[in-house]
Amino acid sequence: MNRASVLLVGFVVTLGSACAMKHEQVPLPEGRACPAPDAPEAATDVSLAWYSPIRSGDQKALGKWCTTVGPAVVDSLPTGRSRGWQAGDSLAVVTWNLHGGAGDLLDFIDVELGLSCDERSATPESLSFNFVLLIQEAFRRSEAVPAVADGSTVPPPLKEKPRSGPRADIAEVARRCGLSLFYVPSMRNGREEYEGGREDRGNAILSTLTLSDFIAIELPFEAQRRVAVAATVHNSRRDSLRVVSLHLDVASSLLRLLATGNSTRQRQGLAIEDALLEIELARAGVADSSYEARCYPYCSNEVTPRFNASTMAGGDFNTWSVHETVIKHFYREFPESPPHDGLATRGAYPTDFLFFRRGYEGEVSLVPDSYRLVEGSYHSDHKARIVWLR
Amino acid sequence: MRFPNTIRATAALATTLALAAGSARAQEGSDLARVGGGALGLYSGAVLGTVGSLIPCSQTYAGARCVRGVGVLGGLTGLTAGVYLGDLDEDAVVDAYRGAGYGLLIGSAAGLVLKEVVERYNWADVAATGLVGAAIGSSAKGAAIGLAAGTVVGLGLYWAIPSFDMPNAVGVAVMGMALGGISSWVVRSVEADQTNLTAQPVVVSYRIAL
Image 1 (cartoon, each protein chain N blue to C red):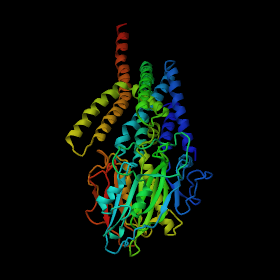
Image 2: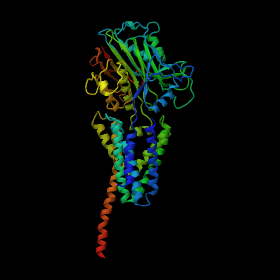
Image 3: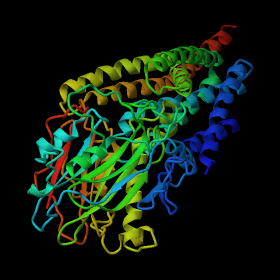
C-alpha cells in the first residue's frame, strides 16, 4: 500500500470517529428567556431550572427557535381541592401526544379518568384517585407568543382533522379541570394567527396534585427545538416522584443522518438521561458527577445508579421499533419499567412509552400488570398509555 | 466546540477533491489509477456501509457507533479493493467513475423530486441524495444484485416471522444493496487479478512458439 493509501486510511478512520456528537447537558444558572431577552413579552423563568446541551452549536440553534415562542407556564397548585396522594392510594400516570388541538383532552379526562371538566363543576376532590398527565404537542394560544417574521425557525402548524367540541388550549384545560400545570413551549404552531391568537406548542404536565421542582431540559438540536419538562409530586409519606414528559425528533436531515450515523433519537434520549443524572446529583448535593460518585453507594447493579426520587418518564419517542437504541438505553436506565406489550400507539408504530425507576428512599411502586394502551385515540394521531402507581 | 464540524467540512471537501482528482488522473498512469481507484472505493464503501447499516444498527445498543464502525469497515474494504483494481485495470476504474457520474445525476434528480414532496427536505438533502447515488452508481451492478437478493430475503422473513416487521424488511433490502455494492469492488479487483494471471500463460506459449 503506497503513502497515498495510508493517508486515505487515516482519513476514513478520522471521518468515522469525528462524527460522534456530544449529548451532555449542563445547567443554565441564569435560566432561559423566551422569547428574546429584549422583547416586550420576554420573561426569564426564574421559577424553573434549565438544562441545555453543552455543545455551542446546539445552543445557538436552540436560541434562534427560543425567540419565536412565549414564556413557560408554571401553575403549581391545582384549584380543585384534591385530597392528595394518601398512603395506599393509586396514582394514574398517562402519556399522550395530543397533536395540537386534534386530541380532545377534555373528553379524555372525562371518559378515561372520570373527571368532568364542566365550567361550573370541576371537582377533583370527588375523585378516588389522583393522576398525572404527561402531554406532548400541547398548544397554547396567548398574546405572550410574539409576532415573528417568516423563517426556517417557525415550523408550519400541525395538520389537525376537524372535530366537534371546543379546541381548548392547555392552559384552558388546566383551568377548567382545576389541575396544576407546567408547560414549556418548544416551537411555534405556525406563524399566522389561528382563531384570533398566536400559538406555540410543546410538552406539558397536568395533575390533580401539587407540582414542584420545575425543570426544563432542552434537547440537542437535530431537526426542531425540543424541550422535555420535569416536575415532582409527593405522597402523604413525602415520597418523591419525579415525572418527565418528553418528545424526540422523528428524523434529522438526510445529510445529518448519514454524517452522524442516524443518532437523532439516541442523542436526544441520552441527553435526557444525562440531565436527569445531573439533576438527581444536584438535588442530593453531590458535586462530583464521576461514575464512582454517582454510583456509590446506591447502585442497583453495576451500571445503574440509584437516586433519592423515583422517576416516571413518558412521552413520544417517535420510534418505529421497540428494539431501537434509545428504547434499549431507557430500559437499562429505568430498570423497573413495565415490559412492552407489543402494541402500536401511532399507526403501526410503537412510538409512546412510559419508563419507571424506583428511588432508594420511599415506597412508590408500580401496580403489577397495570400498564396498558388506551384504546380510543380521541381524535389525536396517537393513542395514550397509562400505568398505575401506589 | 466547532472542532467536529471543522473536521466534517474538511473531510467532505477532501472526499470531493479526491474524487475529482482521481477521476481526472485515473487514465494517466498506474500510480494515479491506484489513487483514483482507492479514493472512489473508499468513498463508495464508506457511504454504502453507512447507508446499509442504518436500520440494522438502529436496533442495537451501540446505535450510531455501530453505523460508524460499519462505515469505516466498508470504506477500508473499498479502499483496498479500489487500489488493487487501479493497479491492475485502469479501464475498470474509469468505468467506475463513469458509473458514479451517472449515479450522481440520477440521485440528484431523485433528490429534486423528493424536495418537492417531502416536508423539510432541503438543498443539502438533495446534494446528499446525489452523493449516495454516486456511491451506488460506482458499483451499480453489485448494488442491484444485492438489492434484489436483499428484497427477496427481507420479504421472506417478513412473511415467515410475525415479529419481523416491514421496516426490518426494508433494512435487509438496503443492507443487501450495500453488501452487493461493496462486494462488487472486491469482485472486480479479483476478476482483474484473474485476467492478469490467465494472460501470462498465453505470453509464455507465444515465446515457446517463437
